[in-house]
Length: 285
Image (cartoon, rainbow, N blue to C red; front, side, top):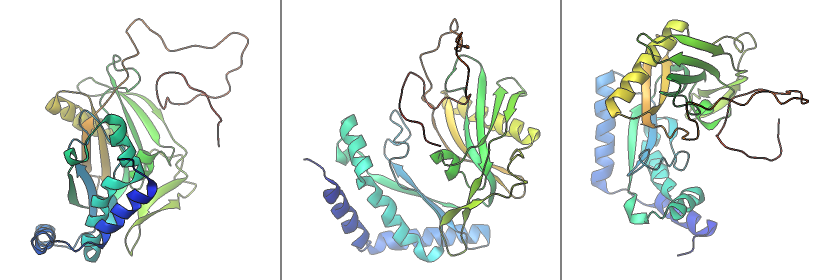
């Protein structure tokens, strides 16, 4: 079958307009009631996609829909939005490229209480571009982690050794012009970060070391390098939100070195690799 944007939208709208089976609706609402009772509050919810096979051998990163800061009265509607995310054009295209039949990816939805995050980000248990270097890389920024995950925020970066205890090798403050914050009516938006906060690192050295130990524990538990989403709440607690296998570069060997300066050419900019290999194209600021 040849998929088109119109087909995709028709399927999504059919799911959004559907009435949930009474048993499923009751189970979702009962689950939220139980969560509220355990927390002694009515928390806002993060609804995260959890398709079969997601974050496994194939990552599906960025293909499906997750919704943050969902009010209690909108959980059922948001649930259908996440289910409908199976049929966005990008998700359909990804599965077609990978040769994955539609019936092999039933969608589950994780329903989690939102963390009142002062800072969030992503940590890799090995350096994705130098997996042989026995070091991990932590990225973070103010607010919710979606800005760092989606690449819309220039985050702080720490390079940390895989010793016990971990040792911070390098720190680099990102520009962090915006942070993703929850709205009182539900949902999130990017807001401007006060100028005095932008140059400040969003984690202390002790918090970086604590997070590094948690990430190493995740790698030890799963037996393979991990990419971990994390959040720091306003009381100073660190939460691991999600862990998935890290698909690190296999291009480096211990004998290779990072490229140096080229004689006769001035180095204009330095930064962090987005991906290994070579590429070309226009640059946008």
